[in-house]
Amino acid sequence: MLIETPNTQISKGDKEVFEFLTDLKNFEILMPENIDKFELINENRFLFSLKGMPEIVLERKRQTPNSLIVLGAASEKLPFTLTVDISKVSEDQSEVFLSFEGEFNAMMAMMIKKPITNFMASLSENLKKI
Image (tube, rainbow, N blue to C red):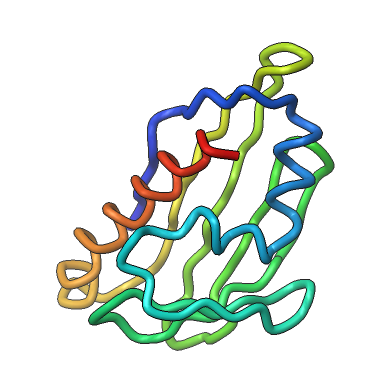
């Protein structure tokens, strides 16, 4: 399953956006309003849950300075990645593209597609606030 957001224009340079997003505690700011729990576990992991959904632990898998951050599920039960692509537009302008990719059986995919799509849309929209 692949879910992508449209590019989000941000009034910050690519370096500033990258630094903001690599500090994982800042993801709490980006979470949707229906967040139930957010906890920074360490500099590479955080846990969150949305109302009515199970807790998810995301961990940093890899990053490329100022252009790419890949977070993934810490559990093998639900293998997925959340990728953040950052493109420089100008010194004080950048674009961010989010993608979610996971391998789920048909029943699971059907159950989580809408909540994940809404979650991704919220993250993308809230990126404008940084």
